[in-house]
Length: 252
Image (cartoon, rainbow, N blue to C red; front, top):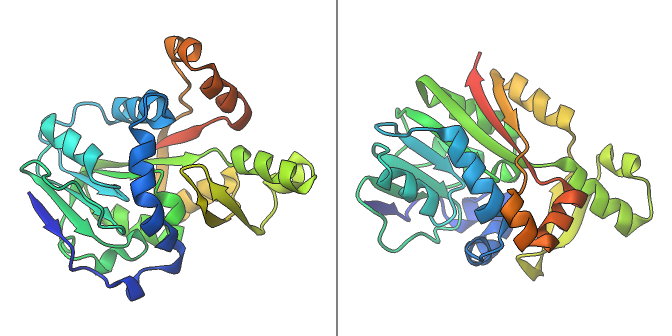
């Protein structure tokens, strides 16, 4: 196992990614809760799309503490890499896992990635932090091995349109198509305010196309029936905000 913490300095990190430096520990605490949507919905669905990873190398961009890429290596993945801007990594990742502090907005500057290829490249709810989404996707595409694919998840844009329409007293349509930035206190830590760019489904599709990628499959995972009964508050949230999209992307 390797942990690299000598990548870009804090002053070199993209401004759009700075909030993650504060949020990273809160995310790790939130996702381990018994009723976290990552635990109940997102990771099981992501893992299903990945399929058998035996002998496959994985690059997890925006890996958090590296727990998911470590799990994949323990399940048989080949030597794999996690990159995250926070550097808030597992203290003892398993053999075969390299964790690197770096910015997914500037993958060419991340040490240890130059000249390497990977069978699976993951953006698990991290793509929204890319300063230039098309540039980031093109850099990832260039690192795909033959027959490799990118697994990318993104929050359904309806979620933010609903929240902004309630906050601003406007219509859902107005907010869905708004191009203005918006700020909100994050549920993982209400003391941290994030500012994001609004986006639509067409924005996502155009980013994929501009980066030379096509969608092999798309999924909108829902709560399993048993989880709906055990956690009705989570089902209520999903009914209103619709959850996430999971895209399996391949180069054209």
